[in-house]
Length: 271
Image 1 (tube, rainbow, N blue to C red):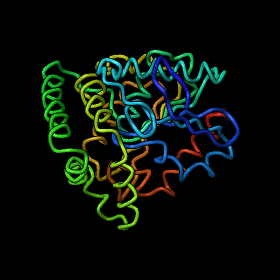
Image 2 (image 1 turned 90 degrees about the vertical axis):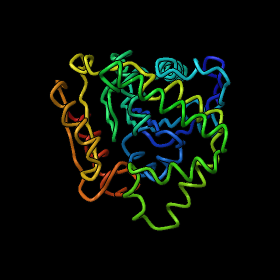
Image 3 (image 1 turned 30 degrees about the vertical axis):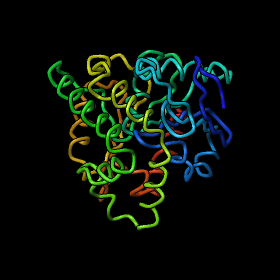
Image 4 (image 1 turned 120 degrees about the vertical axis):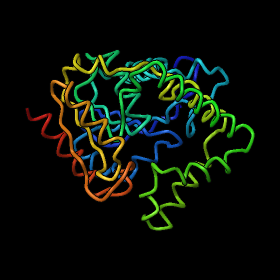
């Protein structure tokens, strides 16, 4: 555990090489990336935190502590404490939005940026307000119905339809991991770090000077469309669309995903 701006963070590390900071998605934790430790650890030193409110990291009551900018400040503190000047950043979904936020706020600290099924947020004020309303309803659902009912609901949303093809054992492992989260942490993550609460970074994409890799599943039409739009603004953008998978590529085709990341990180260091 590491104290970061008054919050105890759980952080795992493995591997050797250039530092890579790995950020899981909403309801996830550090175990998201455990299957890739051996492969990526051959070329990178992996730094794997549980994001605020998730896993074994503390879940403070103050919702302001969960803003995406505050979470990015925590990451900066974390790598400062570890004596790391620059990192490769890998983020999935919510973790991708946090990774992008960090890259925009601290561009000098980022060597390359890899975003799996993620976005720069919502462009219009009205869209952000509508999303905040829906996130508040979901937060109320967790408070009133409890985490088990919420996970039942979350497993059934259209975004994760393709995950039903996974073996029952894998789906049950993911379910049990989600259930271990602190309800307060999930509620405050929705309210503080949700897509409606974060700033829109669309206009900032043109300012990114690092290499950026976008990865989406071909069957995740929403995030593939977002990636196609992002590519128009990125100076050094790359986009890989993976066939026969949806939102959670790292689970649905872990072998392909692991190879894509390894190839990109190694190639980026050779250039």
